[in-house]
Image 1 (cartoon, rainbow, N blue to C red):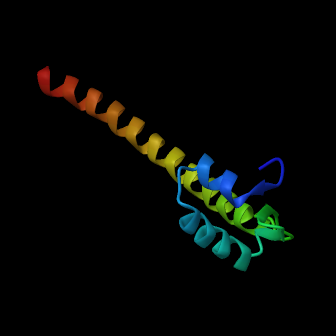
Image 2: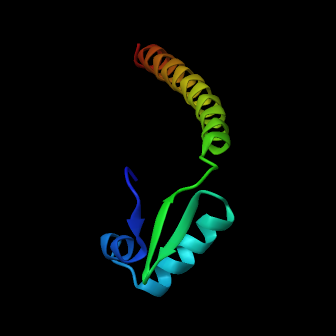
Image 3: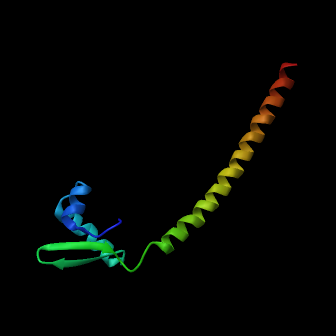
Length: 93
């Protein structure tokens, strides 16, 4: 999000009930990803003190790991394709 938003605005934007959105926001508050403030009858949400740096680093670590594994798999597949072509020619001759 780029700016603070009310629970009502968020519920409308994500096509959720207010009750459902409040539950989601409660979980995000417990994780310190958002904070809320009630002014009058409006509860406003904003990004909390804890961002997703740890989670992003964990995801990036595994993204790199899987990218390397997929690259290795591509190499094996290409090698098998070349071998299959080569062996297929020998059988025809």
